[in-house]
Length: 377
Image 1 (cartoon, one colour):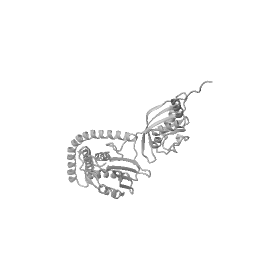
Image 2: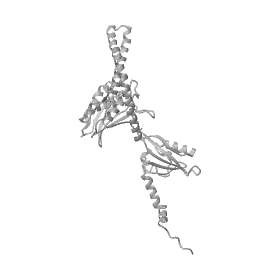
Image 3: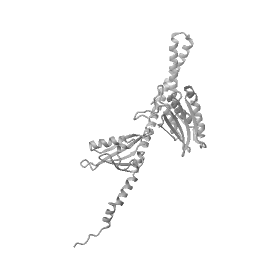
Image 4: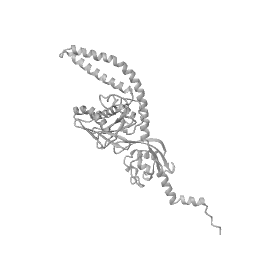
């Protein structure tokens, strides 16, 4: 009779990892990943999903539990499309990006790779490895936007300055012509139209020059309530003329912030004016101010039609406007003012309808940066 084989530490270790402890270690490893992991069988039924997958998809563990079909997961339609594509082609997918629309209307940019379980010949399912790219893409777009703004500012300053002189002559000549024409003269209407258009051009040129001209923020301690009140004051007549309700509310005991009060109020007024223009007569806009950690949030909302953009459109891009007579500079100016304060500004659609902008200014502020300003959209 042969002697029993003596277990070595290595063989014992292998046996343990292959059992319950090995399963626990596997679970611990995938739950420690910051990237989302979802494994599906060939019928699209979930085999396993880690904690990061729940976070990235705004789902709880019960929603992504084993045995559930991927098609039943809210807002995961594009994952289903990728899965079906891989099942039909039996090809892995790398460096693919999809856009998920959340319940509140916001969009989340997901970068994913997908591999075949079992390979082509013994295809058993798909495993997704994905991460939330939203913040990274936002920073990339912000950097690109700042580069574009710098280039546009240099170009605009030169071109617009050359236009201002002949336009001033044209405006003055038209005013003299109007003084000489009788009210019944058929040419008077043409002259009036010409004068109105020159006024529009003068306003546009002022906005361009204000946008292109660098400025230094005049920073001082100021109360957020005062900044909000000034912004509402700047927009009050516009709201009144259109029959739009303009509400303002501030949380109690807000700390002072270090900011350029005039520029900050101008940025808020630009957003409020857009909100007033977006809603119908009898509509509502609101400015709410509150503290969130180490920042003061100026939340501007309306009950208008909301924001509708193309896949690659950003409201802060210069000259992008959804308004018939807009210049597309108002929100670009807002962005520059807020960034100069080391703050941030974002927008989204509200669940109950309408749009919302959040301007976040830090309570403790670093040294100011150069920016551009002036005008509204």
